[in-house]
Length: 444
Image 1 (tube, rainbow, N blue to C red):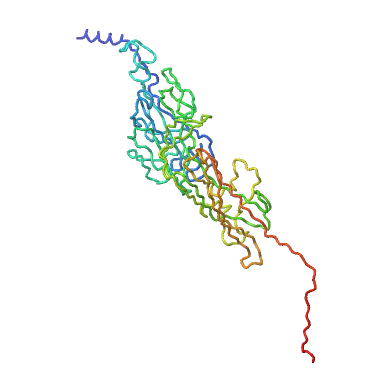
Image 2 (cartoon, rainbow, N blue to C red):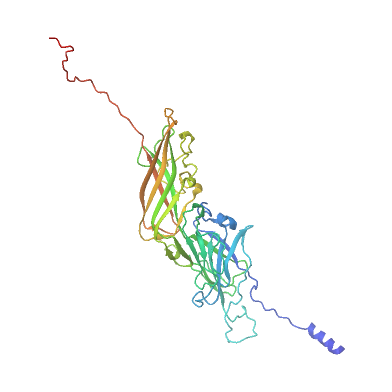
């Protein structure tokens, strides 16, 4: 027994240990993000830009990710695949980096079966797998929490109201509903690739199509992030006001401290959609490789009424009531043409630079009706109230050529004309009129 034990110790001491490596086995999936054509903050969530995207979830920041693991390409070999890798995964920015929980790791099956078609003991690099796993990623922002089994968004019935559920075997989708509430406007964006080559650790490459989602990726080197470029899926409609004093075009001189102030604006947009579904797997780009959003199931083709009540008028322009002009806000000013971007905020009609978002509809002209109620106030110490105050309710049509395209900022600029009340006077010479004799009393 002693000899046997000694022999075992000797054998153990002489054992040869080989290490089989499977190319950086613990490679977590990482994300980064950038917003294309970022604009300035506005609205409830605001116009989506890098700063806003990096805010907390409560402040409209972060983005959601859907991911599908396939043994082959998405979706041709998996036509009934539900999101089996990530479902509406919340990704937030914190301490200078994007993060999420729980962390997911890349599948390690990178190469096909050995050329012999059977197991082999040869040490090859890379190691052989018996399937080829790929992952496809789709993203949208701003992130919203949804019930996974139904996709319903419980916190609102306007804006982003629904996501596809975790059993849905079609592409991931986001349902949007247009709202008249300026505090619930959402700048819905979705993420795509910019066509950079993707190198995987097995030595292979693929190039995600520029302007389209990240499809069929295999595990990259540790530290490689999936970089989403977000684009606007909706059209924006914004209001501005400029004054024209005693002339047709904007400009002129406001005399005697006259103030033009706005009470409300009503916009009627004919034939617009109320709801539609954004498919995150867009299939088209324009001539400049800019992605074209894939909208489906458009519904509610009717007149859309958008109201800017007095409470939502820019504080600089908002009518102050029946008070002297000197007590009114700054009022509508004039801007000399030509108008250039970025537009000066002091001509924005809606408070805090807010705007309306519309589901895109193009291909034909759209004529929009604008009705504005505004006041012209002039101080006059000779009047009982110390001022004159004239209400003006003006309605006018304006046509947008080719309708409203996704990612476009559409401006209705109201030129509010004010003409002085002028007097002219002349003095005419006296002329002789008719005469008649009257005898009072008449002599006999």
